Length: 116
Image (cartoon, rainbow, N blue to C red; front, side, top):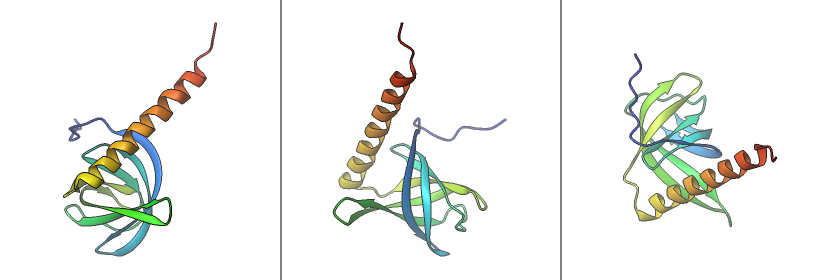
């Protein structure tokens, strides 16, 4: 039986990021996210327990970095990570990402609902 380790529901997103770990810099796509962590598709090599730095590209050529610990990985597929040491700026950023993703999901669901 699979044990669910997440403490909060994750929201589906598709966010291209750059990340760096022990194996060097890589590209990835965050597939789902919550305030505690995310799952990222990436073929870059990681190990459970490894610390990685994820860079989000922002408008006006700015970026925001989040540190996290790899909690589960699937070779050549991706990994789940738990955010570590996020300050207010980083936490507010993740919160806004989640809120925007939920609004977009609700809008998409409404547009698919047939009207009478």
